Image (tube, rainbow, N blue to C red; front, side, top):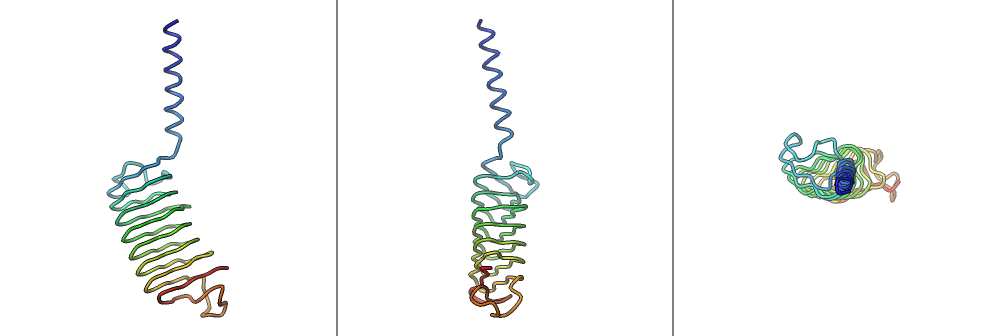
Length: 152
């Protein structure tokens, strides 16, 4: 009887271990994308601490260089933040994305597409704002100082 109980406990532990491994990690620490706790392709659902990190993420990224690949959301605080497709807020000296939904706050902010998006900084570039003030108040301009936006 005791061996049946031991086998049941081992089976439950194996099932829990398998389930835990299938879940996305909630913490990432990295020196570079190659020298990190988790592989760069793994979605991080929680906290990322990096010298230079690069993962898809859903959560908070703190580091010198924060890279968010794929579809990511949350908040990134760093000297440099870059992303493929980012929903949320980026705070840094340089913020760069292919697609942004949310806010970029920094010295230089750049996105190819904002839908919708707001930028606050010294230089703000939204490439899909094709005309200067033509669609105001929905969008401002391709390049602006201090503030730029697109709400269409």
